[in-house]
Image 1 (tube, rainbow, N blue to C red):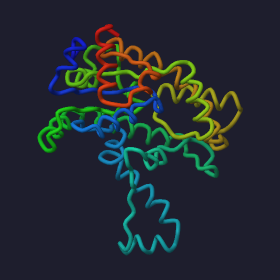
Image 2 (cartoon, helix red, strand yellow; image 1 turned 90 degrees about the vertical axis):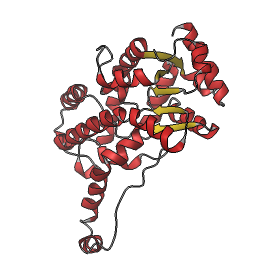
Image 3 (cartoon, one colour; image 1 turned 135 degrees about the vertical axis):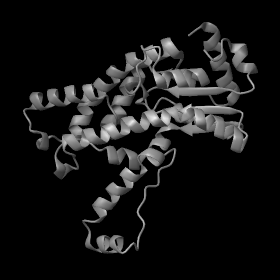
Image 4 (cartoon, helix red, strand yellow; image 1 turned 30 degrees about the vertical axis):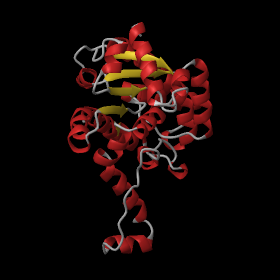
Length: 287
């Protein structure tokens, strides 16, 4: 492990940390706080995915929709308008919208084959963006002079790595250069995430084997053809299963490659000193 004790973390001239866990448990909150405290470079994996690797796919999808409108079609064909996404650290809606949901096209659904193609694009983009962490550490120091670095990973990191393989290229690269920290939610957090998702279901990335399984189960359970599926109903149905699928993968990432902190402790972090104290305590406890 990059920092073998609490004192090693506290006295390090260069603190580097990668936060992982389910979306909604505090990764971006803490990353933003550290950036605002000064001296910390905030690297958002989801932002990198949506700009560097998926930006053209997203913009092309916007243009495809715009071409259905005669006025916009004419303007696009004459290069009179420019269409692009406006992704920010806090607003990843263009990426989420592009990923989409499978099901009835009249309800905004995608054919399952197209949905899986976009999922694969995301998988490749996420791996590439995670591996970009190391060069961004160097850029943050060389260009901006930031001594500290926080990598704000996406909730689906556990879907694109093998936490049990000692030579997993992504986890090896990250663990050799940053402290991996799992923000672990409780059952109450899980229930709240499910309630939140149920109110506003959104597209996500899932492991292909998991998606094929739950899609087949859903079609059989409700005796529906692919084009009859309500996209929101399907992703709601799959979400709780996805949380259960991810939890043990996160745990093995923490056990084999890093440490864990409780989401309720992260929620109380308001300053860099609070964060340092929490990381020091967990390192000294060997958790």
